[in-house]
Image: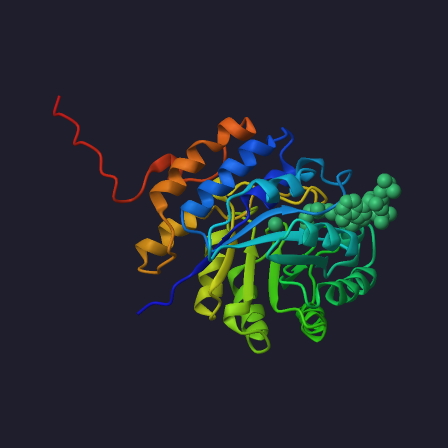
Length: 306
Ligand code: COA
Ligand code: ZN
């Protein structure tokens, strides 16, 4: 038996955060409800960040209040600081995803503070969530390279992972914020991370900026990783990283997994239908390929001989 893959959908967070056209709250809620119905066990719904930094997600509280929560699905919110955690708790999120870059330069551009200041905030947040019915995950952003500083030493990435674990944070995500990772680097870092974080608590977050997204997923999977972030249609990107482009595309990843006999628990037909509706919401074509080409099993009529 091939181990199943757990895919967390991030289109309404990583995807919508960078879209110039504002996606209306009601449209966000409808999409999240449809994603719940398509079988996701984890959805990163939105971010409780400064509305000045990311105006596209200023309606996070309304979105959390409006979605139908499917039993068994974990609804996650990105949180940058203690104020974000307070807002997230008030909105009854199931999980907070704390984000800090390993690159000091990127963290200052993205979060307006040093990584040490982010970590101090996370320690406060861990006090706040004690006793609350909320789980915790933390992301090492730019873990595979920074668009300002370049390579990030694996030892520095692992030191940040250890700091998260020392704070009592349950889940850890290694994020390739601007698609700089390659499969060999992924195999090495995932192997090191799995020595301290069990596979059911480790998530890989890849962007397809340089066309290596699914190659990196396979490399991580073969090294033992089982959880991946992906965005419907391949939307996504950090507004504070030059040249950022989309996450790995959910329906492309699901199609690959199913063709390889790896279960995801997701309904590919529904995902393709939802992806085909994205250009209407965001006002432009989206990068996903399976929604354009159809599934490998969707055969075409034989052309009539001339
Ligand atoms: N939610 C809403 N408002 C917030 C907030 C939060 N989590 N954190 C701070 N604010 C508000 C403050 O109340 C203050 O408001 P005021 O101007 O009305 O008084 C203002 O934002 C500035 O607060 P400050 O603490 O000085 O924050 P900052 O301007 O240094 O910004 C962050 C720091 C972290 C809030 C901001 O950089 C941010 O939201 N970054 C997120 C970026 C992101 O989402 N990137 C993509 C995903 S990785
Ligand atoms: Zn991302």
